[in-house]
Length: 522
Image (cartoon, rainbow, N blue to C red):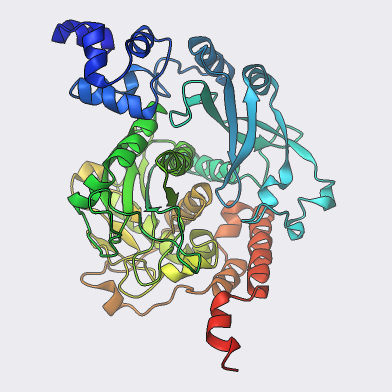
């Protein structure tokens, strides 16, 4: 509800409402007239002062509403015309590790990118986690470190509330110099697989669940993370308090600001919940009928969480296993398939719904081992896979069973879907979803049988068989038969070389634990 409407409804003057919200009359005047967008802390006070009547949607036009043009250039120009306060735009593209890279552009530069694209080195997708070129990929000096063309994914310019009203951002994807999808861009890999679904009359509907930790900026003596001290007690709580409302209350402001910032960007999210470890939370994005957009939302979410946390003087991490002995952070991917009329092809009552579901699950099980190098992309990823830890160690499936890799949730039959529970929160969302969808397409087209669903504790009933070490996962990836068909041979080799080189570099380093265990004893 607009501020003017609240004033009329509550019979308040602007001055009275400003006093109630704890902001200056001048600032409230700018908010009410649309001349300034409130920062997150002011937004929160406005919401509290109006009993929730005023929210982010009253100041931002969410993506897909109010400026949804078929032409990306028109959408971007509409936003800039409607937001003269925006002075710079972050041009964002996620690399192979899911790390956001790009350029900060002025309004004029952003318009040039919208109209003509941005020259950007293709070796962006040959970087390791340190941002260094991996020459084994062939994208660096071997090509002369050539530029490709980065273009907006859909033309939507999105606000960055954690910075202020003068800042915005726009997601990019990479094309080759000839204007074709650049083979090494994970978003383009995913889009190609979605196209194969459309050829069989189906469209993936996807949602991403991401877990993360809020951690203190100060580290332990060994450089490790530690929970944020409670603002109530001043103490660090190392206990596990799943679904703890006290934990939610302790971090209410940062979680509320994350949710508000996501809503301002037009990304629908659900409520937050505390997970299985101190300072661990989950906020889910809603499902959308565009797999690439679902992954865009995941990238925006990760950037938002880290940025908002910094504004609150703390850090956030999507590292798969930041602490030994307590829960890791996962990326759970929910997938259903819509037919050409938009109906859920897995829903009971639809033609061949049960067969489609089983075949899709069969494909996911066949490709799971070779996909582990995508689902768990680095050394730390594999510390998450421990027996009984809700991180699957075998390809299993079942109905309403969280001990399996592939869970078919209960509830509304019209929303029947597969929840893929293997990926770590550190996985690149585009690549993780690409591997999942490729496997499902394989299962559907080859009519693969997954066997009977698991009833009971899958950890007790099925022996571990998935690769649980980085080197084994890379071997399984190299020997895979499903992913090369869907990633394409060229990209499949590119990703394998990148990860293999990073593995070799990691192995060459001496771990501090080696010194602690062996230096003075051998």
